[in-house]
Image (tube, rainbow, N blue to C red; front, top):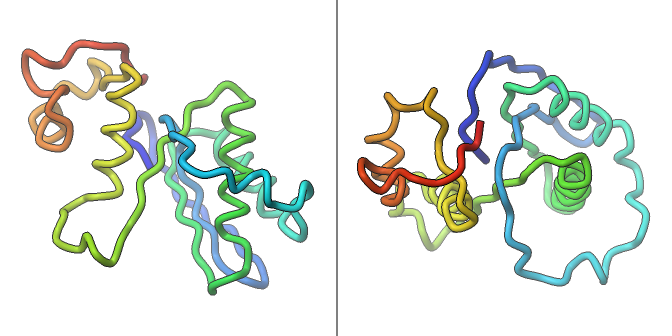
Length: 152
């Protein structure tokens, strides 16, 4: 999940098991588990959806939401896509929702942006007007603390 600049487009990808909406990946994800070592080395049945996500990422300026019933491979699809983005030279930001953290506004977005700040990324000058809001989510990005590398 991330904030990006440029035109916003929305397209819907459909499959027999769910609907996928493209998004722009522009950040960093810290690996916290060794799930890849326990997964089948080949993703099964999601080649078309993965290709659609890759095309959407290459087009840029989009936001993705992957949704569907439990157990249909959403996490695996997103993991494969994130690995592909990293291999292509992109950066992946990840934020998680939690039923126990329902009282934390924008938790997934804040978690993703804090991870970006930890690796030295900061909003570009094109987002100057949004610094006060971004600073409320990531204190390092407010006012005089807004140094660092730009994310685009």
